[in-house]
Image (cartoon, rainbow, N blue to C red; front, top):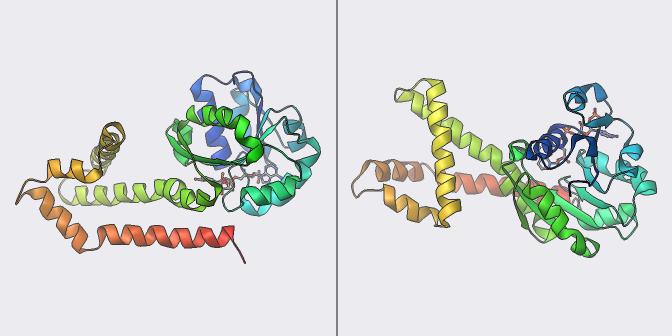
Length: 269
Ligand SMILES: NC(=O)c1ccc[n+]([C@@H]2O[C@H](COP(=O)([O-])OP(=O)(O)OC[C@H]3O[C@@H](n4cnc5c(N)ncnc54)[C@H](OP(=O)(O)O)[C@@H]3O)[C@@H](O)[C@H]2O)c1
């Protein structure tokens, strides 16, 4: 993996976050990374760290072992078509683009390439992403390489491609939902006496603790909740009031609304 050359086509929010995550892992040399976008002046920070940068996608892909596509969904067809002359079955192609499935990607490339889709979230810049990965038949033998790559930047799971729309909602949009919880809890915290900064620190660390309790024990959240809810206690009073106001129901409804929207993107017909 250390000597693999990686081209990242589309050095925007996600492309840059991945590049930073890879650099932070300390396992990928900056000189093995090539990031492209049209406005290359916006890549100066990566360039100053030794990453190859430019606007020539063909040049970036020609030398690469792994090609990561991080452009907007409406750009993917045109850009991928232009890359087909330099793509070959020796290269692994990973698309991060929401709403374009493996079948469509395969139709555009028109070759029997090892194709992957990966759905990370923006915590990838801090190497704390949850990344869901799917692949086509030709990708099977390269699966471990792709898992190893994204494991450097968080946790991964392999899923069937049909679940990518659901993965987009739960993992990629999920960051925003969790942040909205943090913001709301902070606002409550300010009302009961904390300054905004301290409320933010307390809330964020508490959420991280809750996540670790679930991740590291494997316990169902309700089992951990039971430990905090004394009969007739303070916590259960608050929790029941939140549920009374539709806490869980509105979260689930919101998630379903996002899912409907992403499904439309995946199946426009
Ligand atoms: N953000 C997330 O949380 C997230 C999570 C999972 C998946 N995704 C997917 O990741 C993709 C990128 O999202 P994003 O938020 O990073 O978008 P973004 O910030 O707009 O990045 C897209 C980048 O593509 C570049 N680009 C456009 N045309 C190009 C071309 N011809 N050649 C090379 N680069 C080109 C743009 O830069 P120039 O205009 O300078 O060329 C821009 O920097 C989307 O498809 C999205 O569905 C995002």
